[in-house]
View 1 (cartoon, helix red, strand yellow):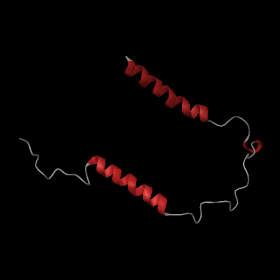
View 2: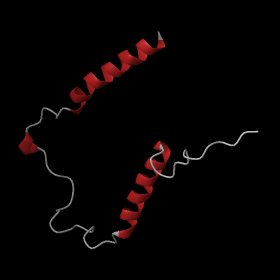
View 3: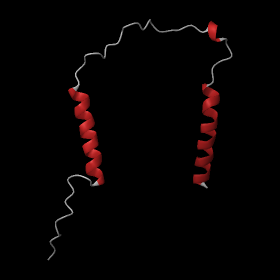
Length: 81
């Protein structure tokens, strides 16, 4: 019973999302931009490249270790008395 109610709630949420995200009935020309101008204001250019590469490497190695692809020690036989 709980699974069916959760599934029904999820279905209603998926159906309602586009309706709620739909633009208002105001004409597009009447809507004005609220943010500042975006001409050449990127602050990401020239940033350090090592931290994102290091983070990606750590994440990929963590996934490979969790799945047993690397650092898997199954080749040795277990020692039991």
